[in-house]
Image 1 (cartoon, rainbow, N blue to C red):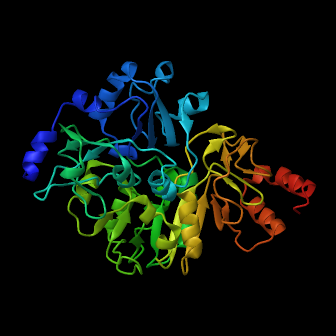
Image 2: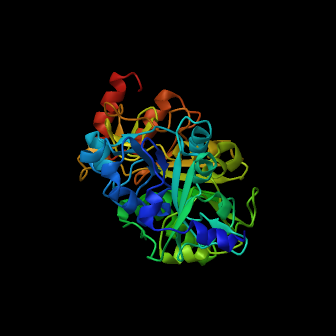
Image 3: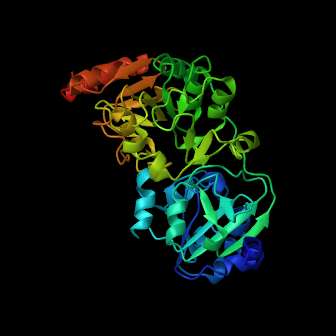
Length: 431
């Protein structure tokens, strides 16, 4: 049978596709824009007739109707990473979460530790050889496809056909639906003077020819805005967004000096504008790969001068970072921060930056604290931390004693809090 005949045979309505999901199934959804809205709406419509179905995903963008505490016994969400659609449920307790490094999610799926009975994903139109591209988020989805009983694709004409290890053959697909709605867009965050100051400190420490991993958020994007005068930068990251696209378009990113996969921008998911998505389409300079390739610290560290830029919510005087919760309340997730901090630490000439404003709540709370708030989920350990940057300067912690760390972190805290931080440090025998 020809690939086109197979395509026609497997094409169906979203409602019919959702009927392939059974009671007790574990449904895996790709990161962010990779989530298929028609399929997830259809699953939501079925929720009252299903029992004990779980949906797992990083960074959901839309609040589908299945995200409902009243029908949690029918369909529950088990977050790999909280987004705006699931955060309130996580904090209220009716959305659960799976602690894991982003790089290890494919391994958890492959070993059956995190189940994957059904995969639902956005996909590009099929090419003449019968392949679809999961260009928006191959992440852990490719591993889940290898384990799943049912693979459902939402084929959208706006999804780019990207290069890399992100292709699925029609023979692997159980059912497909078609849609043509515009892809979800996420713009660049607002950047204020605090973010700009932090960005300048970090940018000053990044040399021409460095390879970058840039996390999500206002401060990492503030760094990006101040790198456009650099030369021959490379990209090996988890997320490609409009900030990185601006560096490519400015000529600052050429990937020529990369020591691993030179000439290639490498990422595992895309989150940005239609302009970004068009940039991915059949672009030989961009490759989208599963996250156990992009985020594996041993692989990423093959890039010399790897600079990892990630944000945290709170840091204590030893350098422990609480990047994913507000006290005991979950806020985001582990994601790839630790993956890339460790990769940059292993990289020849690499630098791992943790960035944060010095205060929160209109300058009423110091984000640099003697100890993390009770219940805080520790994301990056004191043994991994290297550079910490606020709008007041840079503290380099790697190789420093506990007392030296405390002194350095107090030095980049907001001046209004330095006195009480010093008093607390003395009480803890850290000064």
